[in-house]
Length: 81
Image 1 (cartoon, rainbow, N blue to C red):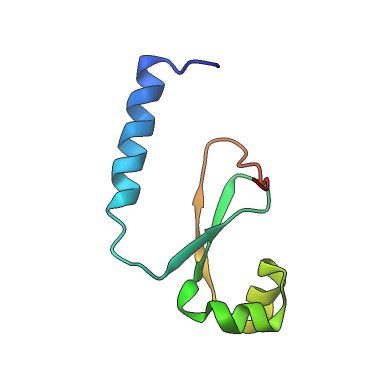
Image 2 (cartoon, rainbow, N blue to C red):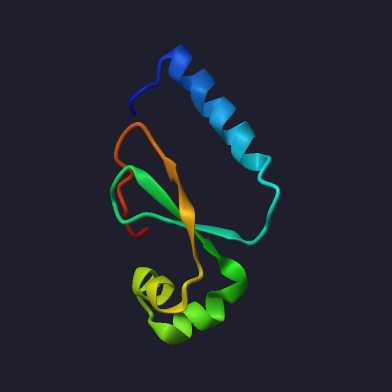
């Protein structure tokens, strides 16, 4: 497995600490495989799913996506586990 440098490990630790400080439980996250992480209101998940099983299309139909994004310094690949 590849190893991060000490500086990179410090950055990851700081990012995770910052993300834990999110003041809300209603923000959902998604990516379509670019540098941005999209944000949406998971309080409306049922309406989003009912509009379209594809999350992005469902968000477009319902308007429950937030305009703000989290932008990373490199690509965030969207993969299924």
